[in-house]
Image (cartoon, rainbow, N blue to C red; front, top):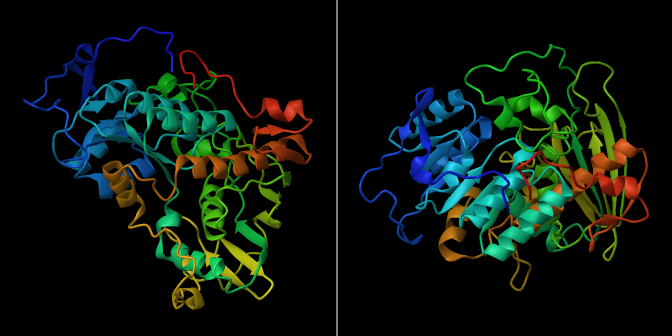
Length: 428
């Protein structure tokens, strides 16, 4: 990745201490010495809001640097770590820290592509929270960067690493419900809201850096942080938030990571007020060929009140010619039916990859250089499903998808939505 702005040397940059900027960094002796991944792994953490903080429950002992454009997030994370680690407001400073083996990216979606590509080019392995990217072009750049640079890239769709996903995949892949021709995914509606006026950004937030590659716009408290999800331009709504979890589990259970739909068609209802513009209701049909099956995204759909576990608001149902299986949830809280939990794979059967836990799977891959359960290739495929659904909704028509070339056949207006112009200097 080329940058159009000049870069200062790492030791000439400043660390964040408290709420302000300090003098150039001074590290304990040996702090910048490289360590082999097999000896001690150190991770840098970019984006320390909800999920970024949640990652620290597991990665606290590995954490070697923290970065966030909001100093309130940054300082909260430092308190969780409970020991000295460098703190930054510019992720490029973190990437220049030579002793980091990997980085975790839990920023809003519009930063994923740029940061992941730059992390690969800086020699870091990457754990990037779902959805993998906000555009199909960015997702492809992430795949290419990981392959070109020989980096591990795990996408944070934690549902694949749950016991529920493993037993459900075992049950379906071994033919217990016969040939599956339909997968029904459901989720509750997108929220409606966002009526507060624009105003000045708070002093703890670098608003321009929060926007990063996005076009400039004035600060609004109902746009920033968690609320970015409810804008098509930023987060894309439930389809790209929990939808990325549910569809990740669906492709894993169906053993269909290498398969993409040939046709996508979406309908939806736009919100009637507020600045959040994601459709409240939405239904998408994905048509797969060779083998033939159909996946639906229904929002809210009919739901499944008897889905396993306590989470009934979202999940997936697998409909075969010999029966059906319902999976509740799809993120870290995924639940399987009793019949799947009790199923034993016979000798010579299909044994899915069994993750030791999503975060541990990443650490194991950093050490072994083996592929994790949710590779960037798989994450890009799931992200593409979600993005194509939103493109079809926005245009009001179905899309014939050429998965090999990642183009919509005969629809240049749709193809213009596969990418997005980024503000300088942020390019993928």
